[in-house]
Amino acid sequence: MLSEHSPLSLDGLKVLLVDDDPFTRTSLTALLHSIGCQEVEQCHSVSMAMSVHKTFQANIAVVDLDLGEGPNGIDLSLALRQVSPQIGIVMLSSYESPQYLGSSQPDLPAGTVYLVKRDVSSGDILASACLSSIGVVNENSDLHSGLILARPQHKFSAIQVDILRLIASGLSNSEIA
Image (cartoon, rainbow, N blue to C red; front, side):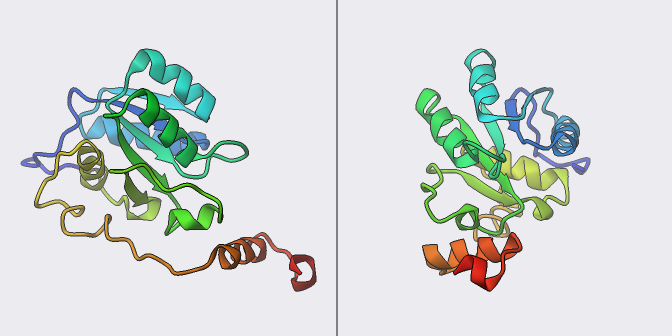
C-alpha cells in the first residue's frame, strides 16, 4: 500500500482494466482504489474494452497480455492507441517477456510499461507503472531504478519460442516434430 507520505496517487485518473480472469480484475480494482483511483472500468475482452472506452475515455489502460482465445493485450493496446493516442498503457503479464506469447506478435506500442504480475508486490509499484505510462516519473520509484522497465531481453528465435510453448503445453517430442 502507499505510504503515508507517498506522492504516488492516481486520484482524478480513469483506468480501463482488462483481464480475462475475474479474480485478477477484482484484486487489481481493489489495489487501484487503494492508490487513489476512483474511476475503474473492468473488462474481460478486447471487444468489451473498446466498447467501454468509447464512453469512458480512460487515461490509462492496464491490460493483461494474454486474454485467452482471440485478440490479445497487444492487439488491444494498438487499437486503443489508434483511437486515443495519449492513453497510457500498462501491459500486465505472467510472462517474463511479451515474446513468450508467441513468435508472430507485433511490438508493444511506444511508451508501454511492461509489468510482470509477480512484481506487483505493492500499490506503489502499480501506481509507478500507471504514472510512468502517462509520462509522470517519480525518481524514487522502482520503475525509475529500472526494476520493471529494464526486463531482461531473451534472445530466443521465433521457432525456439514456439517449441518452448509446445513443450509447456505438454506435447511429446514426436508430436512437436
